[in-house]
Each structure stands twice: as C-alpha cells, then as structure tokens.
Length: 97
Image (cartoon, rainbow, N blue to C red; front, side, top):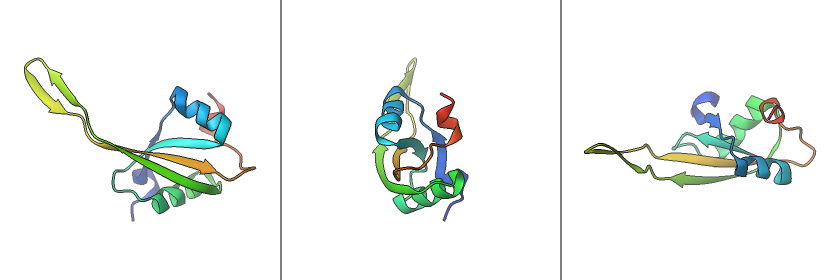
C-alpha cells in the first residue's frame, strides 16, 4: 500500500471541479495510476479527517505532443471524484478559492 502523499498527487482545481464541489459535495484529485478506490478513500479520510461516501475514478491516456520534428507522449494519469458524506465540512484548501 502506498503512502497518503503518493496515492493523492494533487487536487484538481478546475471550473468543472468547483461546480461539483458546490453542488454535489465532491472533491477532485489527481491520483496515482495504480491507486484503487479503497486506497483513495482511506487516504482522503486520513489526510483531511472527513468521512467519504463514495469514490469514482477515470483513467486518461497521455496525449501526443510535438516539439518541432520530435514527437513524444505526455504520461497517462488518473482522476478521482471523492464524494463526502452529507454534513461533512469541506477541507481548508477548497474553501479559500
């Protein structure tokens, strides 16, 4: 099992994520590609001291990028939508936006 900080890489602060936070009580994170839903749930609960109702994940393939005549790929990544239980307080980093 990975540590908390390798499971959750960073919060994704986007317009779509802010709408999900306000309307559904859902947080959005970039997580490790090999992280399971259970690991993500435990990491969020331990890191932010909240109760999680559910976790949904989505895998994204890296896009092809060009730099002149050279081509390469951005790395694959995984996104997790973490829904908090009703009545739970949003973590501090989200409230300041």
